Image (cartoon, rainbow over all chains, first blue to last red; front, side, top):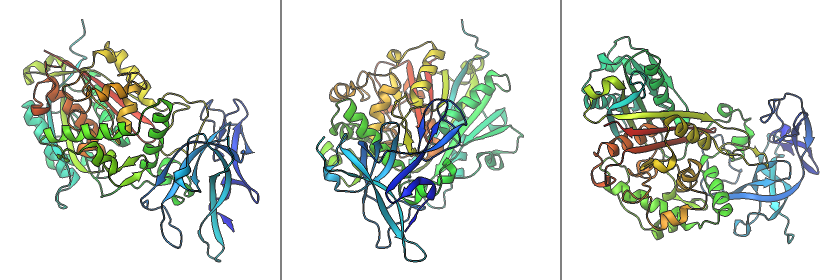
Length: 136
Length: 388
C-alpha cells in the first residue's frame, strides 16, 4: 500500500492527515504549506490533524471527471465529496458511505480510500471521511 | 462636477451569439466579428482605436487579432483571469483612457470551449497532482457544495435553484442571441439528470462558444460617437481574502470570511457614488443557479435569505423590481469564459439604451450593475449609468 501523495499523511496506519500550523497566528492549513494565507508568516510547522469532525457541506460527483482524474481499475462509479470541519481547519475530502444518509453536521471519521493498483499491484490510497454512525 | 476628460463611456457594442457553432469557426474569428460589430455600432474604424484589450481563456492570444483587424501598431494587452476576464479587460482599457493614453479603446473577449465540464490542471492552480487525480478538482462540485451550504445556512429551499433556472430560460426565450431559447418548467428542471446534487443539468451553465466586444471612449467624445452613450461610472476588481469559500480549495479556515465579490461590489459602489438600492438592472455571475442566489446577497442587492421572497414574487424577472440576468445569463447563453463578462456589460448597455427588445426592462432603467466571479477567487464589478 502506498499513498497517492505521501505529503498528505503523517501516518497511514492508523490513517492521520498532515497539515501545517502557523507559528505567528495559529492558522492550520491542509495540506502543509510554506507560507501562511492569513498573516503572510513563513514559520509553519507540520502538524497531525484530527481524524474526526463534522460534515460541513457535500455533494456527489455523478459524472466522470476529465483528466487528470484517474478512475478505479474497475471503472468510474459516482462518489461523494465534501468538506469536513475538524475544529481548527475544514478539509475537502472524498466521502465514503451512502449519500442518501449524508447531512450537514453529521459526525465523520477519517479512513483510507483505495484508488487504483500501483506498479507492484499494491493499492494506491488516498484519504476519505465516512459517517461514524454515532448519534450526535 | 465630474471631469469628462477622465470619465469613460461605452459607445459601441458587438456580440457574436454564444452557443455551439461550426467546428471550422475559430474563437478568434468570432472575436474579430464581435470587434467589427462594436466598431460599426460606434461608427468608428479599427484605425481610430488607440488602445485594445483582449481576453481569451483557451482560444489563442487575443493580440493576434491585429493580423485580421489591421496592423495599425495599436498597443494591445492580453488578459486571462478566468471567468472574471471580461471585467478585468474592461477595467484595463478604461484605465488607459483615464491615464490619457488614448481617447478610444476596443475591448474584446472570445472563447471556444470543448464540450462538457472544464478540465483544470492542478499545477495551474498551485496544487499537487493528487488533487486532480483523486477527483476533487471539478468546478461543478464546488458550485454544488457552496449552494448546499448557503441554502442550509439561510434556510432556503432546494427548489429555489429550479426557480432561478426557469427564469433564465424564460429570458433566453425572449433573447434572439441566446443559446437556450426553450422555456422549461421548474419540475422539468428538478427532474433532469443530476450532475452534482443538489444541481441538475439545467441548473449549471455549459462551457460554450462566442465573442463580445465594446468600444470605450473618453466621456467628452462620447456624445459625438453615440446617441445614447452609457457611462462606465466605476469598475473594480478584487482577489480573495482569508476565509472565503473558493473553488479549488483543499481546505478552509473555520472562521468564514466574505467572498471577493463582496469586496469588489463594495468598491465599485463606493467609487460610483451609488448604492445597490439604486440598481435597476443587474447581471450576476450565474455559473449555476445557486451562484445567482448568493451573488445577489454578496453584491449587496439583497439580504442573505431574502432571495426566496424576491424570486417567489418574480421580482428578478425583467418586469420585476430587481431584474437579474435579463438576457438569460450564463445559464441560457453558456459561458465562453473570455467573452462572458463583456456579454453582461453589453446586456446592461442595451437595457439602459432601451434596445433590449422583448426582454426590455420597462420605464427606462438608468442604473445597471455587472458582476463576474471566477477561479481561483476573483471578482470584477461595474456600475453603468445612462449618460443622457
